Length: 372
Image 1 (cartoon, helix red, strand yellow):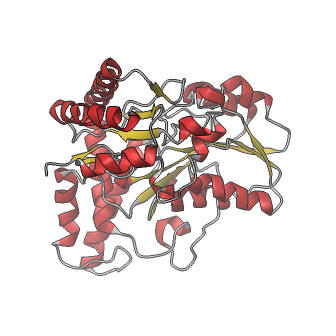
Image 2 (cartoon, one colour):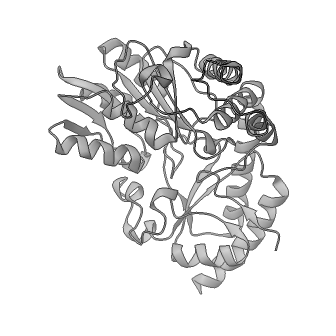
Image 3 (cartoon, rainbow, N blue to C red):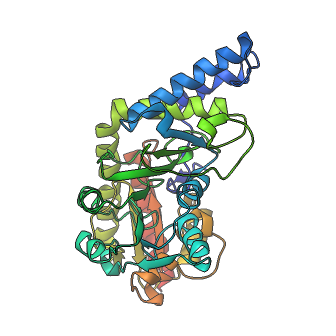
């Protein structure tokens, strides 16, 4: 069966250029960047070059880049490392790695305002500003929601954060690679995960301005400017740096391709299926469609699509396997019947129009059959 992968918000295929960059470490002589001999210094030189590439992507200094194992670790370092006391602003639709971390801090005494998002699917800038208090320690938000693709107004919220002197902490795991990321001076930290934009699994990054003082979660050696002890995963770091280089060269074309695939997919379904709706009224990231197939059970549809060779998702990969309806869609105020009929389709630059056409031709008869 010639399968079609439309679950790229879960993970993406490793780009051939990324794989080739990783081989510089995987197929070369052994080398620990912390060792002082020739082998170690060769590894250190490659690590420094990769860190500079990452820093350039964020218009940052090398010591403002911390390599981690994943987006979840980056978020935990960003939030727990800040050791926030007082008050923090977030929403109830964040990815579980942010949502549960903030809930844990809340249980320890942190005051949290969960800014409502409604059917729009994202907090509005004026709303965020009105919730800032004298003791507000941070604003912690996703740049785009991983389930619906709805974006926040990064520029406006960053301007508010800068004006009010409150750090803006962004989860950009589902954003980077899809569209150009504005690096506003009001943004204090950004977390991401490499495998969401064609780097390997097991590598993440935290960009944090030097003015934001954070403490390490892992202690031991002096790696990562003493913010993340442990021998660096050099092969994956080299792959991540190459993934950044690809985006720097091609982001506009990638965004255009992803948006074209998404719109072609949605319009193709709308022409033949009446009872479908896009979840999230706000502007969306280029690659994500969260679609309610009204009158159809989402789990059943997901299984039927898998049998037909099409991979989609009920929502975030970290919550897959759970039978509960999507927390994100429920918190947006969407009724449970609609939530249970919803699937997420997410595209990558490895997809093409021919695949999308075949997906449309496969999905339509399955949905019509299930509705009967």
